[in-house]
Length: 528
Image (cartoon, rainbow, N blue to C red; front, side, top):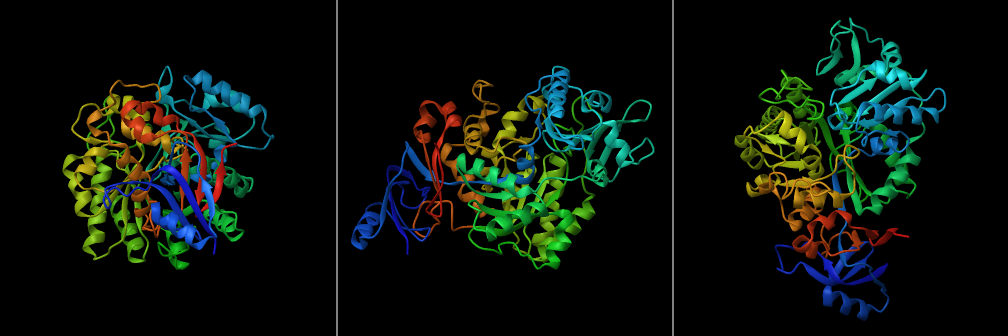
């Protein structure tokens, strides 16, 4: 048996409703699990006489954080791709692409990108001709920042067989110019038309290992991964080799549902480190791509977005997963998408199933639908940084219509369970950026003054709960998230007292530095 006594003057346990005092100064850990805290921890350790003593650094120690919605394969692959998120014009984006392409092997794709035309000086989606001018004789398929649109060059369209005569797939759009020719913009399911192009990729595992180090360095000790079977296989290999230091709950994507059922996967299967998670479905697109499914048209646009899956199909797939022991998380950003997904979840409950149900993002919700989350016990899985990234766009294309938008306070006050994450690489995975956004509803530069729709702010304690206890509970885990007896010993030591900053200088929460990260009582990261 290994026994460690962790000491620090300010350890936030997350015990906000039991003892009335969420702070302690000692944790006794045996074989990766907390067995005592405070004076009892010290007395027990001294009586046993064999506990290693560790004085933790920094200003505060707190539970390790859980990202409830992250794409780690996508994030890992992005480490080798061009990053266009900070480009402020088409010309700037093209120059970044050109410079990146010059350093690539001749046969390697230009991929990822994370371009965001909403931030460009002229916010118009680009076309294939512009990309042709810098991509050379290679396939280029650059994803938008939200992942719901691809900007492809002419070679990519040619090799995929996409012409003026190619019909739009169900749940997608091939954008065309005035003469009917494809522009190179592929929205939602139309992106999948490029899958027919042969492509060799480097092994995922080394990239995931680099990504794991990054996540541990920002205080994440566990994640719910949204990506596909390649990521599942790589994580399983890491775990089998004893190299998986994060706790991973692994989602199944919709196209792999039948495979999961055939293999006998059930949500919650696994161990303390690697577990089967829910199935992920899509109901609509994203705000930045103007494909979120709304009840009313976007301002300045004729359309109401895209239903990524016909309702009857979504209902059928949801019930198939739930009836086979798999929890369900469904992407819904627009108010119409949220309404429809709640309808599928009503069918699950009517079927007598206690499946864990989550709506991913829940960004814009009709006020009448908020109580339905509580009534159906649906978790609102949300990403605070989406609010601060999208606030100007939301004002521009949604406007003042009466919706609960990024409505964390409204959901909590209605008794809805709220879990937080990042949706990385759409946003940065650093959870302290998310905590800052949740508490201030401001960007890093302090804009807007007082916060965007400040009535929806939450307290730091509520935000930490959403990144710890609630995030774990949203995938069925109650054995981690607090620093209390019986819980797994996942903790981080940080350089500042976030709870003191909440009152004096909440903007500084965003710059929190993680000094140490411990997973199961083992040191997983230490700042050099």
